Image 1 (cartoon, rainbow, N blue to C red):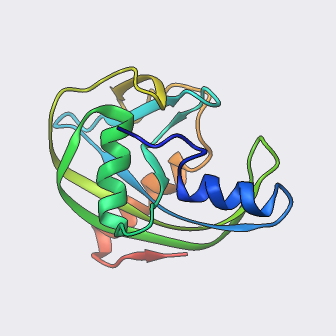
Image 2: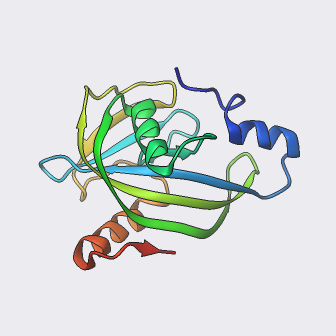
Length: 162
């Protein structure tokens, strides 16, 4: 069973330090493209934005394990083959609740998975595979950058570092 925000490591740290300090957000995202080249997106339950499955790492997890868990929690799919393609450490952002984070995040291309797509989970109200030229909105601001970084990785074979 998935942890609630309050039970998660990041939720506990945020509660401990309050709303004003910038925290390090360590996490992972998992990019799934199906055999037709359609991108898997979830519609997040918290802000209703369409997003790539992603989230914060828990204590004791690797970034790869975090990506696998987050994709599973948000979609019901279990990643069985994945490759890291981008590492982000320079971005600071403030979310809609006024919490500021410096993001340390790895993006993974998920090549194979098992299970059935769950459109509604504790963290999503919808999910589906969408053609890249017809992605739904409103969208997370990182989708375009993530797809561009995946294309750069696939063309050069070098991990994108930002």
